[in-house]
Image (cartoon, rainbow, N blue to C red; front, top):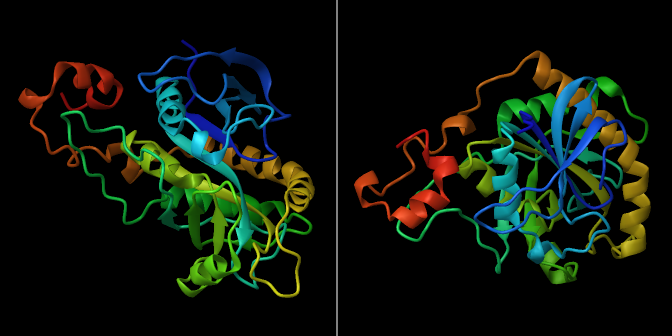
Length: 290
């Protein structure tokens, strides 16, 4: 099967990579259902990558409907070790403006209706998630943004991403609450995605594309779909430039991430107590350790 060590998940507004060459569409089955769409495997500047549209091409999946487990499992099947997540977000800080790019280093999980682990059904694992983003991969993203000197774009190389359930945008009270917590940006999709990537031992980092000021800013209109789409279209070209530059950096200097051995001490259940059906379901993740 075709493989790729570098994966890209495209969020709202980024449904394909224009620079991808030698493209193949791959339909994969997983023990957790079908991914959001076919995985697109191709070459960026001669480097093999796998691309997945998080909401599906045509944007037909609500944030709560995204098959996060299937998506990460499918990327793992293709051999992905480094995963760049491109995501549209609102700003919770005056200093983070629409069209800016943020590479967050922390998350706050405000989702309620999503399964956030591959484990259960007789096999228990507790990953370390104090530092939810791969610092090396985040640094590659930040360096790529800075080196490109993109017009209209200011880089913020750290910040806290608040992940809400959606699909409605925040109330003003919620937006101000998240600001009081120290939130930097707000989105609907990076959790449980980041948790599942860690369980799958994939290095994960987010390229957050700011579209609006959520609803807290008295001098700006409340977020609307039209506003989001307009700013996403303006950011899409820049985002693809950043991703290409980051892919080249990973290819030139691959690294071993702490995420690549995240399960080494995380699995609590003894192997001789693994239910066979669950062991088979999780074989892709367990084979290193059994």
